[in-house]
Length: 444
Image (tube, rainbow, N blue to C red):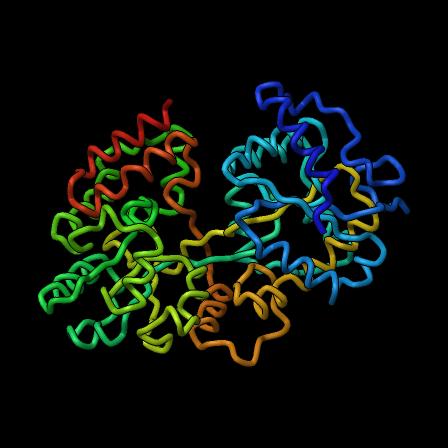
């Protein structure tokens, strides 16, 4: 459903340059697909099309929308046809800034990749308040509480401004057979985790698998340790400037992970292993524990990739740090790729699409892509694995969520963190040196 004229329009807009953007000085007009002016009202206005803009690298969202258009949302499709486009994700935020500056955002699009930019859009009134929209549409609880809480925390808002087309919990996935072979039980504290790693290593089993070349699978461990030790608001304090990563209590988190690397528990080549290699290593029995998000269920449930068997994979939450302020019941989580709706040209027809998507996207994405979302599920596939059901139960029962290490960092801080995270897994970088690099990058 991609229209060539719209591609040309996007290309022209991109040439205007990001630097010229001033969100507060935007003119109205948008795509011009509504038959009357207006913003968030639902007073009889209609649209000629429902536009969606995504990244070329992501095909799941648009394929799910197209399935909805031929299924549960066929009435909306007949009234206001879905028209989609996609651009490269490497310049996503810059492209969104340009579009927002011209009030040319699509009715629905993938949200800004940088939470602070999304907050700018919200503050400028560019993004639809879904809490308010759901109330106007007579909807109750289409989004799971944990997912809604995560998005509000991510954008520092009281209302909901994006929908969770994914909802991922993070934690340690483990090979049950290798745990049994080494006589290891599931750890619930950091000390127990370190002891388990030592037993596995002594049994000739690599304790941890991590994509060190990508960095973030290692820095996730640093962030989780800090949040378990210092409490759920510890990293927000860094973002607010009331604490620094170089403070001793923060360095302790990086040191704890670096100690695992110095012991060789991530294997001999952790710094050169990428995401796909790490996934393959875990699914072929090359290591016992794999910290990852539940988006990996698609890999775990694929028998061609998963040579150890989905029933042989277990999950445990990031352990508590003894004496720490955080709780093991707070689940590291993220909303994957949220989607937002623009306030420009919001009409009754667009509201009908919003309602249909919120009520049905989760069922279709789960059935067709095996993807766990943050939507309330009303239809469970008959062939769903027990592991997928466990993840759904974990999400439904979560009492709170915590964000990842770099969630509140600057773009430069995020880049430096993930570029150097692998050094902790190889033992080549101390916790203090790592934190000094990231703190300096955050301060610009």
